[in-house]
Length: 292
Image (tube, rainbow, N blue to C red):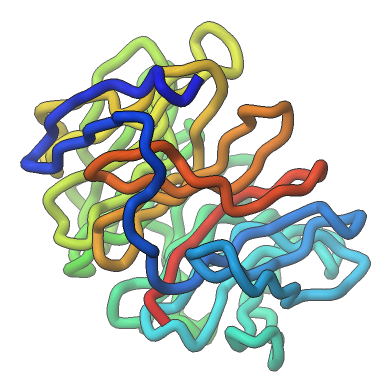
């Protein structure tokens, strides 16, 4: 199945899938959430698959981890207060602290490159929009006001723009806006869904998941930062979602359900088959990568 990857060249990154394994040892750590202990908790694993460690331990569900730029903190979502709220903790799981206090639902946190802000989606007033707040939970601001769903914000490497997904034009597409919510612009034009956008570390490229029009099928796509030159990087049965770049831009981490449940995989953008990092009958998803 994995041999069905396409040989393709995109923005100077040549993806040559030849049936070989990932050829170099990836660096850093990947945080993700897993249901392997009965409910969703946050775990961390080295990018080479070693040293799996559980960070949270509660009766609630902890999901959607996001590393701070310096690797010292992790933002995440927990429903321990009765609804989904954003929390932060140290990278070792200590000093957990709640940042949002609303009756709505907060989800999908993402740190700004300088670590001063966290963008997130929130469901309030019957609508789902993108918000931003200080890294300590202060000075919350609403960035989108569309009656449609706006979700999964991701910062650009320079901190000046925010990617997000929206179905405001009928189906989910990738959009971009200034950090203050101005100049909202649609980047993809397709009859399928485009979700989970993420900037490359150099800001030149955007990866995202595309598909879902014919059921639970989605592939990894890549395009220029202005939405041009879109190409498919993967093409085989199953879903590749929640895509995260490695800090050095050489790999992608993602969740895929090749064997019936979601596991975490990585792939070298220069070639080779995906390497599976997690092996558990429970769901593992939402990877986020730090160099530290």
